[in-house]
Image (cartoon, rainbow, N blue to C red):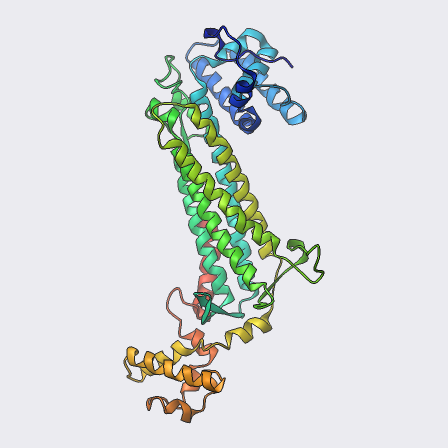
Length: 463
């Protein structure tokens, strides 16, 4: 395989510094755009044919050669070995090797500036579809866990203090909602990614009568860029992608944190299967939630990529600047990290054992029915502020005696309010505590059942 000349060498007479050549090279990472580059080149070839720049024979030769290049790359692991400045020069060099000077005509009417913007959008469009599918998978795993553990009650927390009991299915549905919003964001980002810049050339637009709309249809783009300066310098879509990815990682990290905490000996609500946990090199008894800790840790690198893209773009004048070469590694690693974290988290959810004895015991302790007692008093005609104050004193009495509210005698309870009657014990039961949360979005068994049905249906009609 011979090395092609630089695509820009005619104006230069000196020899480039070897260190700079390596520093300037992007082929080590932008070759991930190879398939997109070949595809975009094929569509551009058809555009040049329509503009009369290429004959039918020349266009056929180029198209056939591009297919050979693609096929060889798929079959030869060493195909990408050897020096190349970037993916564009690599493909052009291989094309010229196959068909000679005809291959040199393909670059007519385009620049690496609109090439790379087009390639990146094609590549990212596909990755967004991968994200969407992975988000659907984790949502299904959450629904499966919720339905399998439909009757399980766990403590709900605020400030990491026991607050009120909720159904485990309700907890699952909370994360289902978060990932549903992520799917909506990904769908929205995809609309702005799916705009074709090809035909903008270096910055001023192409001088040839290329039918950009036909090229866009060939490449599956829904729209054309409307300003050539903007088209070659726009990386808003990369930032938007990274920001949407960062929010996915926020949600995955929160899920990981819950699972890590609930898997501790102190909580004991969950146990990770051996498939998604590791041991200690020193302490034989340990079972570590490394899968979830890595997800939690990897969130930071995605947040960093979002910031790095913003910082890279903030001071750039129009139009293209080589700073933009820094977009790809951030975008590529963001895509890889989020996809792997979604898949691992889905596997964890499908390998999670729930300890119903521990969740049940925890849900019945810690005065989590205190609010129910206050609401009981309100239903008896007491103002909520007075009821709240009264129940606070009742809790203090329970703490003094070392008993839960429902374990206090009726005499003890009535000492705090004459409005308390024998029916208070029914109101303080855990089932009554759940049942009263019967408004839309609440954790009553009926509401959660309806929410599960609606969630299943949304999987078929969502973005």
